[in-house]
Length: 235
Image (cartoon, rainbow, N blue to C red; front, side, top):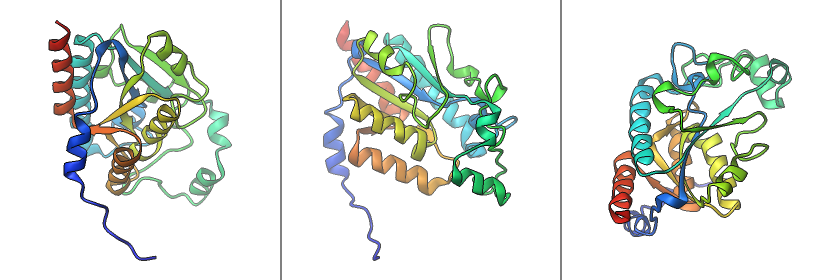
């Protein structure tokens, strides 16, 4: 099949950006697996690119600080599993484990011990967590929606706009965006607050797929400015 370059539609996306309006009373921030199992190189079992972790955490902390200052709830979705679930994985992950190959380009991976319930790997990165935040535990899937209380919590909070950040761009974050879209939420992703251990190609694919099909993509500077503008308009 002949490969073609993706369309360069900068003007179109710039026009669309003006259509994403932040109302702090109706907006929540949802982080997806921003835990030590991905973002703490010292203990990570499926590590995001080590060279990106510090900047990603710093960017996310700044966005979360601005969101809290604007009065928006922050919700952390964290996947955790029992050891027996990892011992009996999906067929593809079993095949990866059987051939003793890492799923991550250039890094070691530990699918057997990843995200075990109660482990340090399931701890939210401390710089991103405050006492007023909510934590949603996801035990089964690659989305914080399915089999959790997230949708119910958002409706109790009267929220219909979501801002996502997390790991991986092309799996859990994208799945969260698909679920949010299917549930009729308006959504955006912060581009420098997401990453993928599957490689930069799939990270970029995830962002482009979200941008063209599901919702908005802004970097952290743009998102913080949107929060500040929303605060100023509310005064």
